[in-house]
Length: 158
Image (cartoon, rainbow, N blue to C red; front, side, top):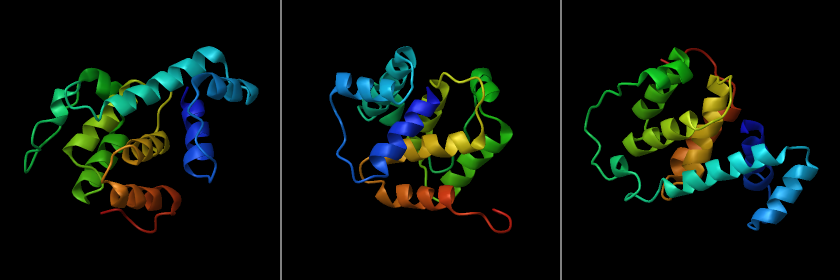
């Protein structure tokens, strides 16, 4: 499923192509690209849920004002999916202003819905990019995240 999300993001977001919105047409294209229909449906549902997360009545945690200083306590399931490096990266992105309370929760929500046995920091970066792309008014944060994703780090992050 994650491979399909990556394919869609790279082929539609990072290209000049017009986005295909017809579900059947998109499914056919992904099938021709070699993906299985069951995985395609899961990926499309994942993307639909990402769009729904912007609707605050469905996600009450998004309507709450972000605390000035907060500490995120992860559930056991989240700890199993997000390793120390991934959680540290989320904290780092909050500290530099790429993520805020709302977008952090959206990222965690989308990570937990991924149907993949292996999940690493590089995968997390792509999920963050997908989330930021879908949040209006976060163009600067998206640009910063793109830079973090595609540039090779030099030295230590802190």
